[in-house]
Length: 514
Image (tube, rainbow, N blue to C red; front, side, top):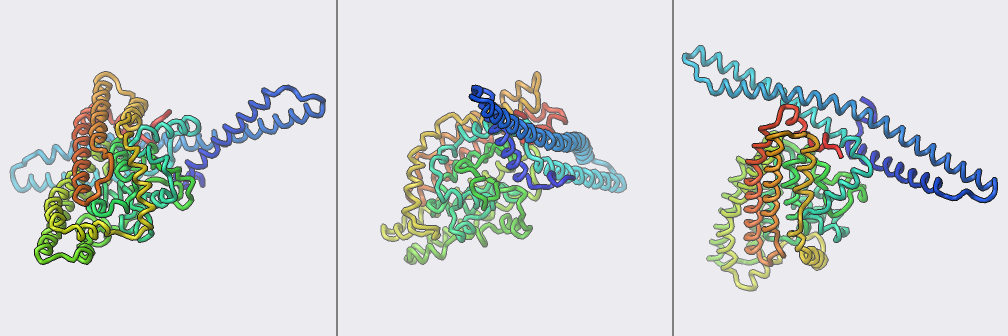
């Protein structure tokens, strides 16, 4: 593999974009020189001609280099796409074989042992094929978008993708805090990890195979200390929830809308929390088995120290602590140990996490309401003042209030969340007949899902923890409603596809063309 192919994906994407930018500028310069009137005097005309020739040579050289790089990338992409298609066919056959063996009921011990051995063999083959498919898809991702998506068309698509999104309104409020939020997101930090770096917490979509890894921490930390979160937290959560169904965890259209990542070298030109980011098994086990420990722990001691509860209030705080532990327990079964490689699989993984998060909120909310309601005004004020030291709070509030003042855009059309993925799917999968009808139903379901999210998009952030947890519940219910609207239509459409079409849909960001 060439040196260029081994470079990180974001480096290749940046270099391709920069090269296309140079080509565009050179083309404009050549056109300007060609349109100029001949200079007066032979010497001036020769200078003008030499300048035109020089710019033309530079343009030709840049175009040749671009064509050569695109040709190399295209050959690699075609090979990997072909392998992925063939592998998907084998996976489909193995899955059918495993299902057949599981449905059989042989009589006699010997027959049962024979069937068990056959089932184990088929499962091993299936796991090996899935592992190799995952590796091939990772290589496809590293190659970046199709060559046809580089340049003006890609820029236009990226700009279109940034518009008509929940987070679009925060682009106009980019501040130095936005850089910190971008780095937090790219690093996949938990809220408390971000705060230790004096950065606001942000929505982290994936960590390893786990969707919304810090859900337990977020629903309660955000409830207590919303000012310590990036103002666009829920806007990005809504965008990510819809994006990930179609584009996967590293889709090119899942833009972090507040700033341009290439403006900040610290972020490495990557604006997403990488699904494949380095994460230890110990970290994943803690997130899955003990979310109420470590970086996600509840600040019960801090609450008690701040409000100084009476004996009766202490009992209610103990009830809140017990409810928090019970809520943590429901998260254990929603953690995955492997990536979902298909759009229906990703949506099910996300739905499972949202469902248990909503259940956790419903467990804790009554206990929090009872405890908070028992506090006097002074205690409630001290409770409200709790939070991490990530900077002067007055500097955070105006930004949040200004962004909230523009929340009317929640009701604006979300074209990049509804139209764009359906258009890309149609361009890549080429549906026909019943497939096209099923895709239309998927498009309608997606629009209805986004409308459900819009209905839960708040006009402002409630001022009390109880109010914020209530708003949290409404947002989660909207996300669950959105998922339940899309899942049947997505399953129906996916079932109509051939193995080749499924493989292209599974790798939509790599195979989409403009």
